Image 1 (cartoon, rainbow, N blue to C red):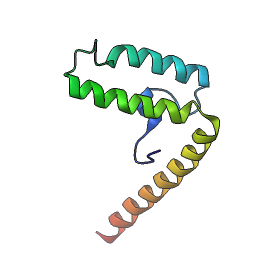
Image 2: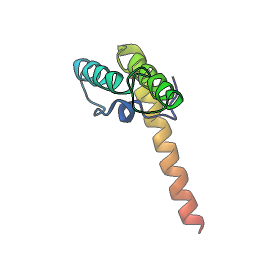
Image 3: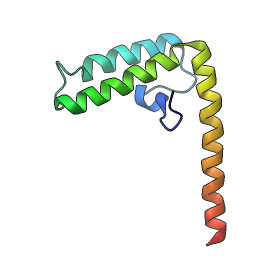
Length: 90
């Protein structure tokens, strides 16, 4: 699980999306970016599928999703706070 990556953005779903919506989004994007059929070059398609698979595996599992959400929210707050502190220093 990588909290530096927004899995919701990768799957193009809202953070409050249901498991069914997440699954459907994954299936749709997997069909679009699968290396065997994607218009992207093979390496780009493989990278995209790896991210899609990772995002889906985390968000489809209730326990992992809750852990990810908590860690991602905390990291986002920290990043926002760091940016505000940098602005104040200038």
